[in-house]
View (tube, helix red, strand yellow):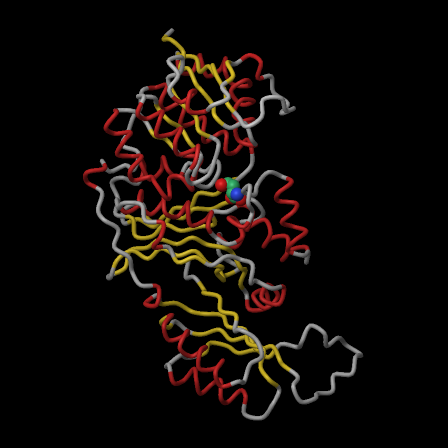
Length: 441
Ligand code: HSE
């Protein structure tokens, strides 16, 4: 049998601990499947003496992950520290420069520095593998790298954040409050150390930046992504979406357009009968539309210790087998510069919710502003205020507002924005309009 692949693991949080347990469970079977053992020789974490439910006294301990990254005793460095820069970035750079293979689950690091890190790995002839950085256990990176390579990808999109999908699902199915459900996602180990990264859409954007590069052969361009999170979504929106035959999902979408590549992250109304709408809880879903393969969807757990450790393991196995590929599929020298499409030229249908003053002419003024931008309406609903319950005096008084929900036919985003700005300045509404894009699936 060949000599074992020796690992150094930096970071023993949810994923690091999950990986140690998985290797413990699988090591005998893996050795016989691969003809080669996989052995953890050293670890590093912020705190040594913490009950993680694993025995780390078997491994050499490093206080400093940088020392571990260049240790003579390891073949591959597994970075599970997290974070865009700091010690995570320094340790990955150190490992690559020392000629070590690197496996990481760090989407923030790749989204911001992936292009340079890939070039460095190629120069040194080592692997930089990151399957676990996108969509938990779903093998989307391997699929883009291997299965779709002979295709022209038109669009890649999906539910890429388990925490947000968990929150939206629980709010819809159980009518529970946002804060309570977020706390549950944190307790289950799904959320980022700072959950604002999840709910503000940045985690999805990190993952989308990686997918865009892999799907379209471009340099990674995180800063060009249009990002909106889920914190403005109200129970009224979820209820109205339900009435209209939609569910609200936080989607990341990257697609080729005539003017460049569109990259966007925002809450999206998806038809209830679509497969994407059925993706519940912490589950993720990635859809790839490609010329030869057609429309393909991959669905699976998007966060949590075991699913993420499973993807880290698959990267380690590639290294153990000697499969070393250019990290961004296309060799670094052949990546194209990223050319962005303008968000304002995005075309689609829109859901709009307004708090309209209950007075004569308000509806006509709103309809006029929409018509000026040549926006046609598919449906319009006047919703009963949530406070107006049966049996309660619903008599109207000056200053009352009525929730109004509209669905538009396909139009340009620039037109919608102009119409909403005009409606706001007309003084017919009492709070900022809510606008949610509708995605054709
Ligand atoms: N916080 C992330 C999520 C973890 O909820 O999807 C997996 O990347």
